[in-house]
Length: 297
Ligand SMILES: [Zn+2]
Image 1 (tube, helix red, strand yellow):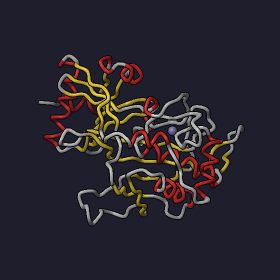
Image 2 (cartoon, rainbow, N blue to C red):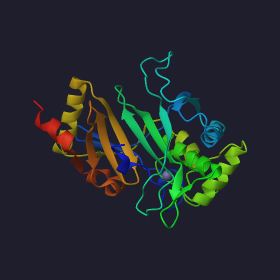
Image 3 (cartoon, rainbow, N blue to C red):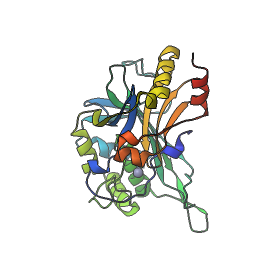
Image 4 (tube, rainbow, N blue to C red):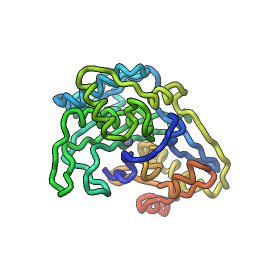
């Protein structure tokens, strides 16, 4: 996945639910916003998933009993358009297994999620799509593959689905919290999910207690500071690109569009500084975005 570097990795420190949530960054016409995105109340979310994986199914069932105002509806990969919503050919959330996921430690990470918020035509914000990847195996100290057991898979699936539901960030040390990235917590919660127990998440309850698309910060910028983005928004409208998608991960933040073969990506150069004070935001258009800007009329 081309934006894998922006994926939500699973290691960090800290306390209280929404303080630990990392909002997405949006900017246009001389203004920058930080926004919390989630799925709308009452959403029935199509989840493309390996239906024969008991750990994944157990994690989905556990989230469906977590008291959130959404429903996860699993379907086989490639199920096609929803007859009740033919406008939406893709599932909302895609979950798939990969053999291994690399990380800097060389031991392999167990799961990762790419989660995109979007700015709708009416100016509101909400989640648009998420992809979860789960590793079948990790590596031992000698680098040999070691398969993850069912409880570990269910636990990591719980955690990554929590990201896919909109919680960008972690709640380390919180009791029985699936957004705690600690593997022993996740193994325990995964074991419970396999026994049919629901999951309870302070993190997700806090997020879903707020309206969808809440703007948590808004700052004025100089008009030139959003000029490139404003141009891309214009091009996107003229040429029918899909997006804009707003992504926040541990390793970065970006605004991007699906525009044919190559995505058009504008990265936030300084995500930590931007989350602390959005008026500090700096943008780095990638090569495709620069090409599109140059060919702009
Ligand atoms: Zn995580």
